[in-house]
Image 1 (cartoon, rainbow, N blue to C red):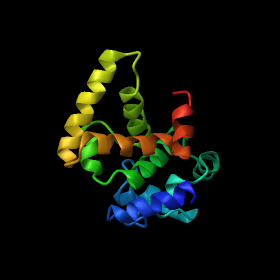
Image 2: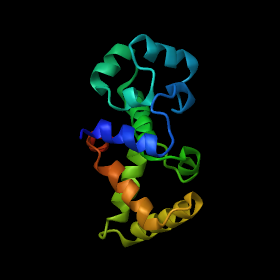
Image 3: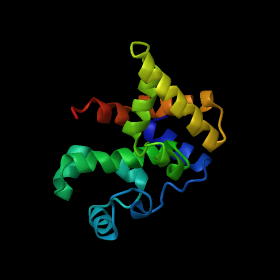
Length: 155
């Protein structure tokens, strides 16, 4: 099963419609920008999450960083069910979720790992999840092929 098919299933399991309009979900996309995305055939966060970012940058005439940001937010929505709660813990995109997972696995920086573990425990509590379950969800975001691309970019 392809990554995008698996994530559509995850979204349906989490009671998210993968066909919700992107301007209702992705921060930074207003109605005018959503219409511009719609003009090129992108109207849902599933479509946005798995679009070719280079082609999208050229078609939208927006900075590459903006395109990666909105795509990364759309990808996070496929995995993370309660975005307002995640955003309170500074996780607004798949890049942020993947970075938290990476920090949780970083044995070379024990202080940073400790802070990440505290963030994980607090977030898990607010989401009514066990920390290990949340860590597994973060791992799934981290290893998604689109997110691997996003995280590999030189920021």
